[in-house]
Image 1 (cartoon, rainbow, N blue to C red):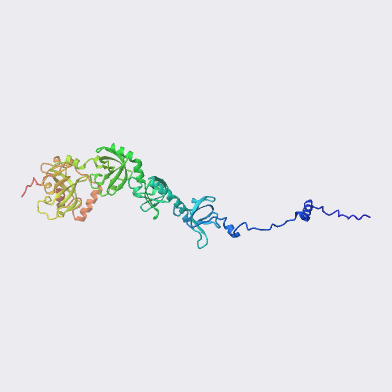
Image 2: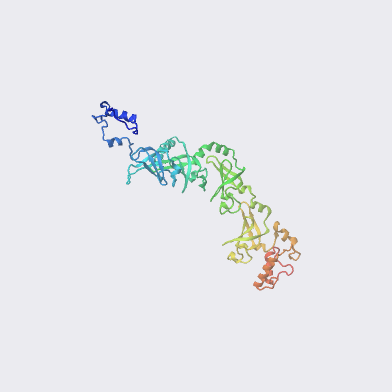
Length: 468
């Protein structure tokens, strides 16, 4: 009988890999022997060794990092420090109330300045706009020294001017935006403008710009040529570019000229805006060109008919004209006798009898006949008389059709064209008579006589009855 061990035919066969590993473990040559540390090759503690792998930061330093998170009120920046740096939304941009997502995106590599290495919450607080500000100051100072030009978009309208993003906030006064002052600055928002630096103060964080200085420099040669070809007396077309209290500026296609308020109209002008508006196309005459000061004086009324000249041409002393009392003064009354033409009735020419006050004879708004007794075109003065008008005379040409000699018979009775009354006018007169107590349909006798005397510019003598 054999002594060989029996095998279980149902037992699994051994894994060759396990057999090999077991054999190697049992071999004394392949046994693991831990290495003995005989020298401290770090030279520092393990904690210090870890800190040595992190970047070093100090307040005021500029660091570079990667944006790892963007929230509504802050951005997290990985700069290789033991914790991410926090950039509050107000420290992201020089623009106010900006959305962080409009400034940075995840994965962006940006620069930031260390504001606080560790705040009360243990956070590293950073500022992107301060880093941008520090970098920009160097560039701005260099441009100022070289008398160069900066450019940037307009990001805000503030009191007195505009704010430009030139790496920092540059202030552009309203008076220096264009060659002339601009009233509405809102259309400039979003536009990129070029300007010269006229004031720089880092301690006060103050940068003042002038676009007008840049425009004057770039357009100097064009302006000189334009002024050289502009002669007094010329008539030019232009567009009203600005209206101010003392006049209006007109763009002549190369430069602006000023129409002083006194040159806007032959009539009295309370405010230039009552005559012209921005955008109006006008025809003006050049009055003067000041080459040294680069100023152009213009006139609008010089291109229009002078009403005084027109009146003087069509009227003469001794004529009767119809006018309206516009103003009473202690020494008389002013009467409008034409479009923009007023004459003075001196108190001594108001009546045949003595008059203490003008209101004893006339009232503002009253319409009446006056005689021209003096016409001074050069001084633009007309002397009128109510007293002499009552004595009769020749009516001016514009009244001849209705009040010329042909309109009266030999007895001085008016026989001119009749006036057609509308039903509305008749109704109004009927109502007036009813209130005044006169007969229906006709004026009281006394009132009729007064009305006839007021409207009859002919001779005041009754030829039929004569004087008593």
